[in-house]
Image (cartoon, rainbow, N blue to C red; front, side, top):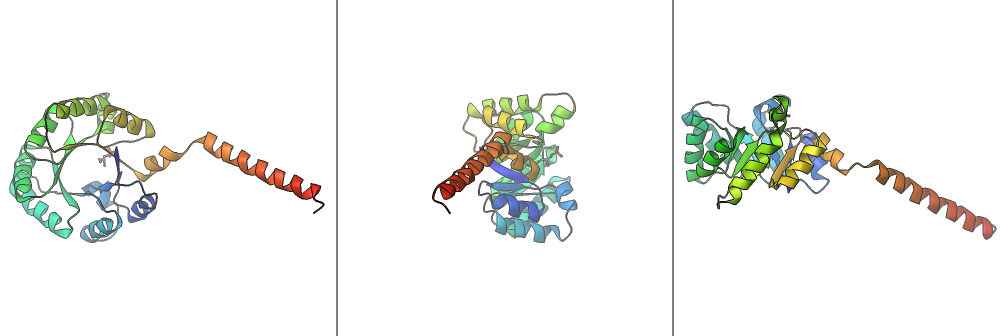
Length: 222
Ligand code: G3P
C-alpha cells in the first residue's frame, strides 16, 4: 500500500519525507487554510519535497469553474493531481479534465456507486472518507472493501485512496482490504512505527552491551 501524507504543513511533510516511505500528499481547502502563506507557493514547495502525486482541490462548485481551477492547479507542477468533489458538476469536470490529460482525485466519496461513476468518468483516484463515516456510526472500512471488490472486477485505471484515516487500526484495515493508497496525518504515520517492546528491547541490548564492556574492562584491570 502506498502511503500519502494528509496535510499541507511543510514542516510535517519534510519530516515525513525524511522517513523515505511517503509516496504522495493530499491537501484540501481546510488543510491549506490552516497554513500561513500563499496556497500556490505551498503546493509548489510540497511538489519539490515529495516526488509523487500531490492533490490540490478545486473550490468552485460548478463544472466550468472546476475545470478552470483544475487546469490552473495542473499547470503549477506536473505532480499535481486535481481534486474534485463527488457531485454532478464534479463528475462532469472530471470527464473534461481527464480528457485534457490531467489526473483527478475524486474526493468526498461516501458510497460505492459514487466511486464507480468516478472511475467511469476517468478519475485516477477515488477517496472514500473512512473516519467521517465512522463518525456517523457507519463502518467506513466496509466502503473501502466494497470499492476494492468492485474495481477488482474491471480494469479501471483508478486507485482506491483510503482517506480520513484517523488512527493506526484504520491503516491496518485499509491495507487488509487492499486499498492501493492510505492517506493519513503525520501523527498517524509516526504511530505506525512505534512499539513499546521495540524501545524496551533496544534499551536492554544497549544496557547488556555496556555491562559486558565494563566487566571486560575490569577483568583486564583497566
Ligand atoms: O483526506 C481527507 C481528510 O483530510 C479528511 O480527514 O479527519 O477531516 O475526516 P478528516
